[in-house]
Length: 390
Image (cartoon, rainbow, N blue to C red; front, side, top):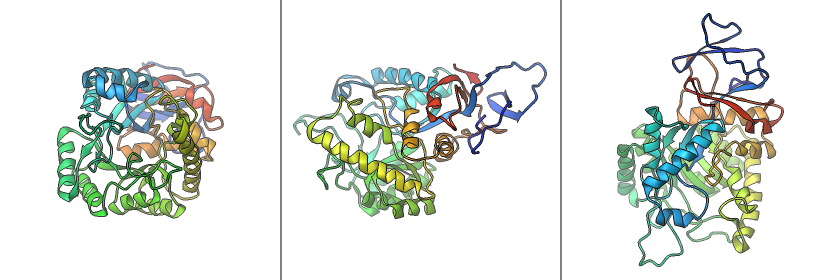
């Protein structure tokens, strides 16, 4: 058993679950208990993916936004959710679904009521950004396209939009600090103009925290990340080009890094979004190199790192992100903590560790992921809140 905290495994452990929670972790089986013998499998806490888009799917990106109803995409989200759960991910933090309406909170509430088998969901509804900061591109301005985000400009509008999202049921606020669709600051990487002033992003974070919800900041450049850090956000998403001193500042302030390595590399290699060609391919080659270097700089600091896959084209492959993290130098125990206890602390769920009182989110895999991270893909057992799913 890997408990979500330690560097070593415990052998021949008996975990007792009652009413959805762990009531003991020891060596004796209570009388009259129903026994699930996992044999030589490794037991772990259920994985927690801190960056998903559950209502998006493979294929024509613009087509699904323009032609599919939010109701249809909610059904897609239900299917994606089940595949994700079967892969051992028992909680997701979903950070927006590009015009899918309230699909994420509808699925979240259905899961909470036991109507659907899917990971528990921490939902953002839609991201907040400046006018033109995150939108569909390539269309005539005379054509009204569905909004991908909430446009809010200036301190007053930003505060109003955060309040609106919280009132609509958002559990987390996602802020787009920059977007490469805007003016390119560099032509050889994915980058863009900053969407917000310091005053705007600081007001956003203050308003979210006043409401008791955390802020995830989509950033690529070091300058944008510095603004988000100054504002006091709770996590930096992607962070493609961050300096070591920036990661050290994040560590000092308790801000978590969610690197999302796999999505850019799979896009570069033709496995996502139909592949990349021409100028975009060249940008992705350079971006992936710099992103890997950024991640390695993070590993040289005490910054907390959490698992986030950021992919929707291949639901159920979320744990592949953990293999990329190991590939670029993260120790296997640290990788597993990034997907369990560290992720739980970021998203605010009472899970991620196997100890008395915690929610009984448990998975089992073939092999030992402490010595072979690829074992994390070989999921044979899934329990969420004490209910056996697989």
